[in-house]
Image (cartoon, rainbow over all chains, first blue to last red; front, top):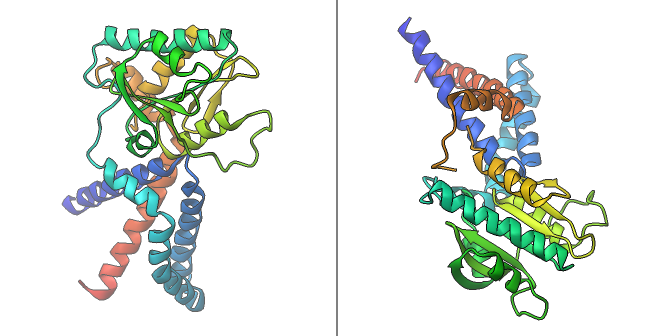
Length: 249
Length: 46
């Protein structure tokens, strides 16, 4: 009886670990590689069960080499994962509910005004994954979140207007930041560099990204590689709140 | 949000609706890995 319970606990721990590894890679390009590895693992197990000696030998050798390959392929993700270990702070972890509401309303208002003025904007809100590498690519601001400041940053001819603005711990931490472009070839040609950068960042991090399109004058939100288009100010605020609620349960 | 109050009902619902397939696949994988390791241990008599 004790052995059975120990076995169940062991499987449960393994399940949680594997689930979190898969969750970590979900929405990134690495998930496709991970899927391939899982198929190979299942095939390996099956070949062993069926006693297919040659195929079993082949896969055993392949796994030996693949350890090095995985380290090379997943190098950025492993580094990011190690940096994330133990870091469970969320945007505004020390913020009161009314402070957070105020910040979201300011962001919503700024997006609405920028859209009305036929301008473009790209705003990223840090969640769990640190955006430090992207903050370094821009100019440090470290200011209170206000719609006026956000609108000022995205005013044309402003040195910081080209690039993304990052909100961290309830403050505008940097502007003019460079985000990675998505490699998704299926993305409609209607989407410009701003949308590609937002999707690229959301594929690599769990940041919540707001885009105001200059051409179509609409406000969109990108979270975990998914694009939510044509949002009103209220819809935008509620979508951000929803994205913030989602935790890795 | 860390400080945002999330009801227990929402958490339970979230447990089943958030990535259900990922949860299922990882459970299958956990069982396969556990069975494989147990067999290996038995074979080499660790």
